[in-house]
Length: 296
Ligand code: C5P
Image (cartoon, rainbow, N blue to C red; front, side, top):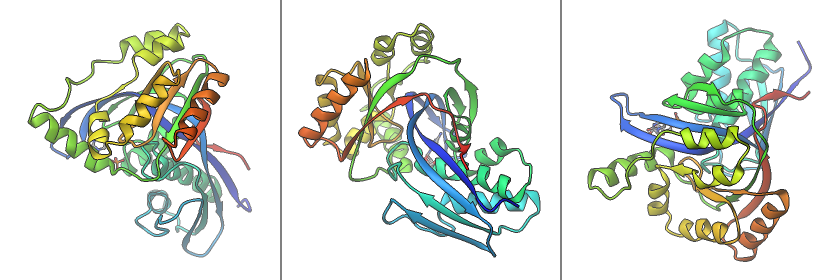
């Protein structure tokens, strides 16, 4: 058994997020384009008696069974017939409840780290899908089309790097609440028409046309995020006014992702957002990046 296994796992943004009707199981049928960006959580798994979890870099995150990383370790152990003996040390950089799939990323990192530590083989994408809608993508990374509730993935061919600013907020939005609100808004015809399939986005990615990508970023949950947090609209508009090719609320928000023409443009947009105090942090990064990876 190795002394420890260290895994790095990226955040995701949704370049397009089309939300269909609510299914009998409570989830919504999605057509989305996931995109992994260079903002990473790190997880170290070390041998232990029993299961323990320590978290740094985030306040108020439970270090018990209610944490998806904990449940990922339990699920892998149960499905491979080993005892869940591991100490997990999680270092968070991905904001909690930020629409960037941070919790899903941690679950993916745990599956990979524990599989290596315990030397067991399992179908990790299948276990990932049982844990949450975005966990399988955190294993895969890159850019991928997600269907079903987000767990059915088809990789998008490699494309040129995209320059991003991630405008984070000092608060979170509950994913379940955002989905429930979009149902309510649609029921009273107070939500825009659902967005169409991502054909124009995929064509712009294939053509290496970031300006075209910027024009077709879209998210059916965005009106729900703006309703829950009206101040987000200003952040969104400021990023566009500062010169981004396009912007979108990621997932259920509140993080806004702005696509820029270059690293310099992204630095400028980030500086404007910071100066106007329109974000808690404005992170300059690129995508796509690989999914969860063992780094030591
Ligand atoms: O799968 P995950 O646990 O990440 O989803 C969190 C919540 O988001 C679900 O309980 C559900 O309310 C909502 N959701 C949804 N449709 C999806 C994905 C998530 O309604 N496709």
